[in-house]
Image (tube, rainbow, N blue to C red; front, side, top):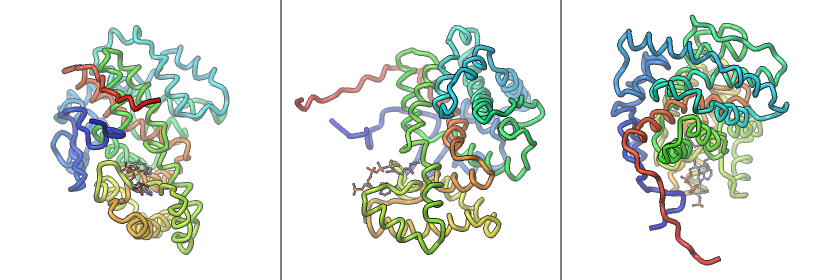
Length: 359
Ligand code: COZ
């Protein structure tokens, strides 16, 4: 029977993660997300999602060697990047460049290593496109830096402060995987036709670009910039709600209580309180927005989602808004590829029905 947006429909059975919207719980491979990521690196968390257990030291070393190998981009990819017209959005550039990873170049790479390869390449592609668009020299990855630190190094050309790496890495680990969100679903549908990983990631990137999915942090920045001061919160929010606009950073298709990821990110931001007026505004605005949403949209169970404090973290590490969705993609590519590999292992092509309701 018809469910608009497949709301509430179980389209996939998976071993990778579970999202309990009522309890507000996210579990990676059965374990609560904060238990998984605490004290673990991006690399260890990614391995855990791909394989269901943490790597031994030898497995971690092999993973790190694969990441290093695949940070070296194929020459034709760099040539295409240089041909992209100025002003091309970074998400458009990533979608274009990933689709140029012609499958024949990857045929020799086993599927599990292809997942690592794209996870390695996406930060390099993002930094390359960003610096090309800004007329800056490209910065090569450094083998001594971890995955998250390397991304900041390649973006800015300066070694990032440990606090910045830690804040960003927490966000990346929290947003690696989230069940059957639109971009992950797009990746699984693409793989289900026995297409290939470059195509599945291209589908996912195109889906992630949408403001209702990956674009929210930029929307949160615009919202808080529009609010500007705590005394403006109510007037700005009520005016949007009365125009039927959605408040970016709030609401979630699954969570009917607080998003566990925003709880963890809020704690990070609270630790920085008083150090950044913008963060202070975000904390003040959140409480008032929740109150106004409950008043104007009673019963919709609208709470802060991960993107609200993600925007605050990005802003606190001087990440420009055009890099928010690409950075989200640098995390979620782990989930996309984990689900693509799982789909390949027990595949049935997705082919739902449609109901003709007259022209
Ligand atoms: N602000 C204001 N109203 C919202 C809202 C928001 N962020 N999210 C949902 N609503 C309202 C809708 O207007 C709708 O109200 P009516 O019943 O009066 O029509 C109701 O809640 C249900 O809306 P919808 O079916 O869209 O809810 P759903 O749970 O499917 O929406 C998403 C989930 C995330 C798309 C949410 O609506 C949204 O757009 N949030 C803003 C974008 C964002 O932060 N995305 C990142 C998600 S991690």
